[in-house]
Amino acid sequence: MTLDYPSILFFLALNNLFIIALFIYQYFYQHKQWGLLLVALGITFQTLSIVLFANRDILTTLPTLRINNFLVICCFALTSYGLISFDGKIRKNLLWIFVAFVFLFYSAILIVEENYTHLNVIRIFSCSFFFGIGAYYLFSNKNKYKFSLLLSGVLLLYAGFQLIRAYDIYQKGESFVFLKNSTFNNWFLIISVLVISAISIGFIMLLKEIDQKTILKKNMIIEQDKRKLEALNLTQNKLFSIIAHDLRSPFNNILSLSELLADKVTTTDKSDSAEFVDLINATAKNTLSLLENLLNWAKSQTGELGFNPKKFNLSNVISEIIELKMSQAKAKNISLSFSITETIEINSDENILGTILRNLISNAIKFTDQGGHIEVVATTKEHEVEISISDDGVGMNRETIRKIFDLSTNVTSRGTANENGSGLGLVLCKEFVKKLDGHLQVESEEGKGSNFKIILPLNSSKQTLVQVA
Image 1 (cartoon, rainbow, N blue to C red):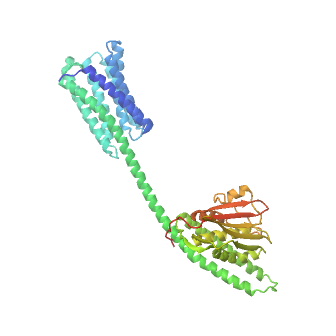
Image 2 (tube, one colour):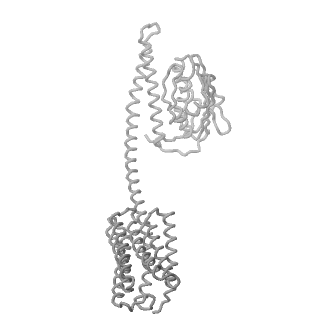
Image 3 (cartoon, rainbow, N blue to C red):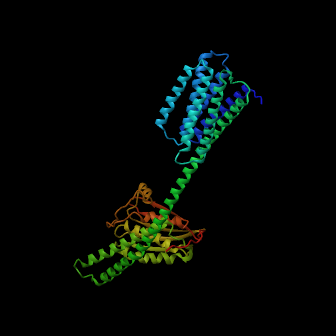
């Protein structure tokens, strides 16, 4: 078989340039592994040695030969060390061995440079040495990547082939000529081209395999964390159920007992008993309201608060809440009125809307002075209903309006009768109005009161969700 060696070397140089470009692209856009740059540098040195060899008749012979030999040995060392650094680890002990043997092999070449046979044997043996070490470390890697094993096999076979070639050159002695057609030389060039291509493709595939295993491990960790979170959510849901069941009943009992006790205390009683009973009753009401808000907020955040729309009379719901809040308003001598222009039938979640109205009316009472006035108005417009809760209380500035619906700001203010608050009620109202497919508007001015407007669709477009107990 006859080969055109100059054409083969030219093809090898072009192939190397493509591989160098590929490795640089992989480094900057795919895998930020410095081993890629080492392999690219090693192949660059090989390409330069091919160019120097092709121009050996033009350049000065001895310096060109020395540079060429140094580039070839560095090519073997850099390529091999780059391959075994695929996992990003710097093997310092091995690095010193590589550096030491680069200078050892090159020094040996300088000593025997006049003996062409010995020079070629040393250069080829350096290839076997470095690639042999690379094959061993790729094979012995504890992760046992399949492409590292494949690369190890390719390097080992090529190192063995180079040893056989070195032995063949040594046997031929002075009769060996590199650019001479022979079966062995032909196979050497063909195998070299294949090995360089296989190493390049194998290295990139090895990095992809590492990425896939890393992603798989991360997915396993995510799945484990997901299961832990699900277990925590189940525990949390059970806790909420216990709180909802076991705390509501005692508070309701306290409220009932305190109201009965308050009824028995006559207006002529000048002792502190009446004041204490009223204080117990007010504290129990505030605490129960806070508990209800916390439970509703928790349910809304965990998705447990179902949406169960049904058609109901809006005026009846508002009237019930007004009646419920009337005693709280009378305690501050606040007039609480409700007006409705027509009978309004609305298709929405009655429980959620009731929670919104209770919080907004309680908030209005809290920030209205003694003798103040609160008015609740409901009107319809096209396919919407607007419920307005207005007061002539202390009002708010723009900055306060911006903060009251943000839980992170934790805006809490004492009422006109020094009432406490958690700051959660209005945040809850905003969330719940969104759940009803509506929106909440606020108009307020300091010293002139506030007006909270709930705008809801008369017929909710949302589908019914299952209520979680």
